[in-house]
Length: 372
Image (cartoon, rainbow, N blue to C red; front, top):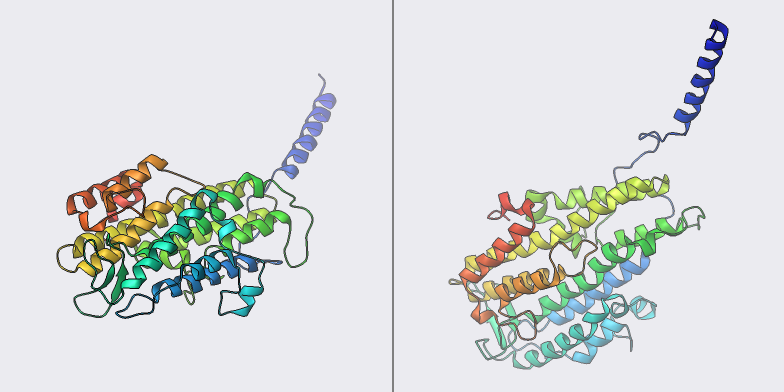
């Protein structure tokens, strides 16, 4: 090949290479905001459901004092299904949204059975709770009191956290971050909602229960936003990590960077699941600490621990099999069915076994298992 031909060939290769490089995505080609501040964001349906659970949980806990009024199971079920105008907030009654239809179908009847059981227990607010006797149990300092069923379980906590897990956590990580909601149109922008994919991601964010500038602002945090904070944020950075994943995933969707979206889905699912595991461990620790000294505090903590473990069945990432989750529920409450669980039979040895099982499944807990 003569010199002129060689130069021509090199020029062609250079131009071809320039064409290839111009098609390659620049990793810095789009901005990621510091807060969840994007155009066309809407998750009002999720806000409605958080408000609905807020009213339902407040009503369920209203029987947690001596001589409190008994609860009506049908009122709780109406709040669950948003029927018969059950809410104090008229806007919620007018909403087309509900909790029941978004709760894992296999768990809907259980939630309603728990409401029946809670209403039955609330008939005994004049009694002191003890093994075999539903009633009120007060902490040693008298500052707090809880309504327990005959087996020592605070059903109001199991209902609230149960819906948080089988509805909010499930919908956000298994449904809205799943292929059915992510493999959709990401071109057509609907004013106020964005593309279909953007809207689905925003709905997942809505179930988190945190302001758009969380975790620097924790005003009004509730449900998962609340439990990602506190000691879980201090020792595991769950609030920061989960919020960053939600922000970066949304930015990636808007930039058509679906590989990065998928990477952030994996992080969000991992961190959200860690909120459940870390919260379960936190309350197991409190249960162990109070088991022999303050029965009311122990029963309250272990009821929350039981409910957070239960929620581990419903995520888009399920590190523990359902059988493994049930085994931990047995260690915490002596039965995998909350209607049969009995906290009066809980022992330090069994609670330590539950703690070990969680640490083994979630290595991030190992170094902070006693601090959470």
